[in-house]
Length: 289
Length: 87
Image 1 (tube, rainbow over the protein chains, first blue to last red):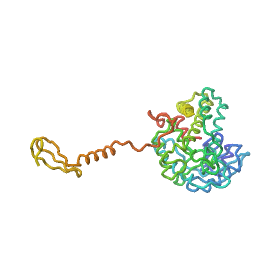
Image 2: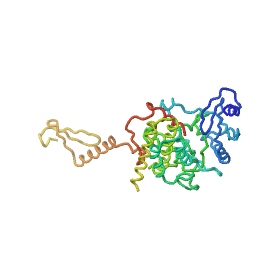
Image 3: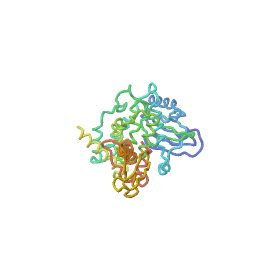
Image 4: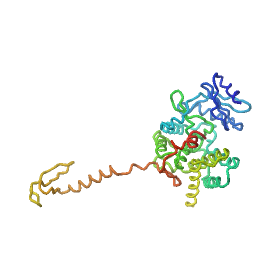
């Protein structure tokens, strides 16, 4: 599969496997080739690729769509991804991420765009707990926190298509690259109509779990608001962030313990921090009712 | 003018628009009407400027954890750093 995928790049040179999970991503020369999961909805993917093409300066545009062994394959210009060195040097582009999301959220929703993929990622992560063989006592706080969440439809926590905005659907630091000297969002696989606060919810969940420092969190949030970001209110951003950040805490905890279980390991400190956050979510929900 | 307490000579100083008479002998200070209030007001403004906490950062949720200790950034790489970059 990797060789055939690499051939689609029509480039010479060594092949680097960038990701091998639900998706398979390889790089050959200046082209990245991505094989999407076999169950990918083609119409939804096409609509998302079209939307990405219409977001110059915000999102990387695809080079093409092909098919290989029944799987949809997209081709992309290779950007320069963030490295651990960026994080270590304290040069993590939190501001650039915040600004790009603010600009994305300000763009109109294009016709035919499916719901953003955030909420379905949450459901998938929770459903994977059992499949990964996570012990019941470990899964318990995650499932309890999940049960305490406000309703989250496919279109995000707001629950209505009509007030949804253009939302990335799966934002983290791996979702920005430098290309031709500018930072751009990548990966429109979950792009769609949703609650844009979900795009800030992963860093918010990291922050609430004590994993991300307040300074980094402030850099990101302040840049988002300064760039006119509308997903959260400037005077009380947690009004909008609270629900999606709870959802992402559940998702991150579920993913972390599932990864540990698959590796036959106990949850590490990071997973423990997320499990504790799930316990606190359950506690404050109980206290409020 | 003459110090009302020790009858020493009083000298006038001007401090930020407030006239202060100070006795060369006993170092006592004489304030004109309203000048004590002016000083008090200036002190309050200064204190507010110096000691007021910075505007509240964007706080956090009711279920948020503590940020007291060291962060996971540099010394506990592993899964935390990986999580920054992956879905």
